[in-house]
Image (cartoon, rainbow over all chains, first blue to last red; front, top):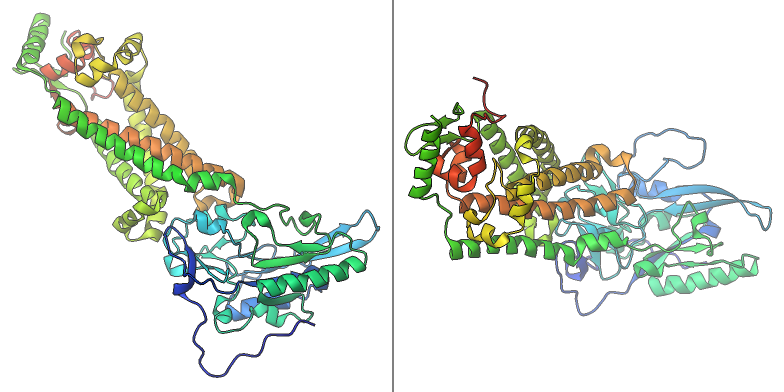
Length: 312
Length: 223
């Protein structure tokens, strides 16, 4: 058993991290602090998940989310997708394993992966609407959010959702408010089987490797840790019994990367574009200084007059 | 018979744009500038401050697509007012082949221009194309109403194409405004609606000859 996090203190606790610990800030340049905080991570062990949705409930409870009552569309998954007020969702997949002939019920708790290289933050045009703390947590700061939806386009995991009522982007915060006072995320706290555990990223990797060995000894030869390198690793990781086929788990991307189009759109191209605009203005100014205004002369007027008079 | 657009005084006065055309143009200009300024707010962190003109980023995000709708509709009217004079002619190709004379204002070295010269026609057609591209991609990324209709992959491409087209459109706009400033009398054509005969002789001689021969521009009110 992974040692559970201690209960919260009763006295007021100063937050362990805050605005001084930013590693990245959307549409802004920040100087990261010299000392990076210990990276944290949430480990979701799919082999231990029983699909009880306690994590979903705990998330909604802690974050005061009340998603609308949805429709039953014939499976256990409820609601059918992530919502502005549903930041985590158990996705249920039934898979007929061709090797064993077993029907496997794959349940993946979906939500923000807290990428080391966050595509949402890269795409965001609003200064400070998305921040990344040095401990790895990627957080949306709603008061700076303009609701444009660029984060949705930047994210390789299709996580952020824009509220139709508040016009703000919403997603899992990794319970940054709880983590700041030494607690773990609400979902991890609520999980009855320790399918969700929380700690430092190093500890989570160590714990995961024990879990992977255990799964391998039980016949899951391809068990492994999902910590995709394409986004620099994530601060939410999965232990997958079939790590060779992550897409089995409700289309978890096998090799997530920030789409190159986002790089072209947000990179140096924009600076070049502004430069081209400035150059066009400068060319106009220089042209005017060199040539002066282009003025119709007295002679032009006389010629026009004689043309008109000739026709009368 | 002289076109009723020509007023035989000295200097000769020539009606270039009707009142409705001018109103249409300035509505378009006003909202196009609003469109550019609100759009630049999301273009780059260096221009985000422009969102302040619209009451903050969230308001700029909300208003920008509506400005785009207004510009598209207003440009559509402008398109039909102007398209008749903007057909590409062999003389336009010859005009383009002498950029030195164009830039130094040596119009005697250039073919006589009709109501619009080749440069104006390029501005007209490139704006037409760019506005079509921008409204099409803009609707794709107007998440408030159209988020559900396209995939994220399509939206990624749309937002990139939208930005590139916007960059081009802003440069075309700068060229358009500069040309109006450089060639004295052009702004008057769009404010009072009139130019002098000398202006027409110097810059749009073929147009003046056509008017003298009795032509009436398409946007002029029917007599």
